[in-house]
Length: 133
Image (cartoon, rainbow, N blue to C red):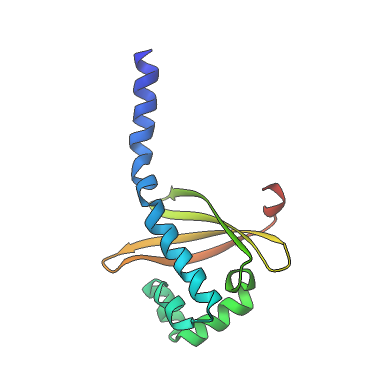
């Protein structure tokens, strides 16, 4: 009995650091969604990690990329935060987005914690998995 309890407590303590980050991570992603819904490219761009900011250089170029490549992110109808997990030292937040046409999309957001706070370092659209949700 003690070993089962010890194993359960050990698993919780090992995963606690990830759970502790969930609220600040989802707050950043949610703030970027709000900026997109308000057509506020400058604020949305402020949530991008420096590597993303270097690639796109301007808020408008970033907004153009999101509108063309991730239209479900630009103006989502519904957003649900799924699991937050650590993969190879990086935090990834899974997000389920329902677009304006009712289609469901799964995306993974890679997050980095900088001195200025959490930033979005990458977004991957997961192909062919929305049907299983």
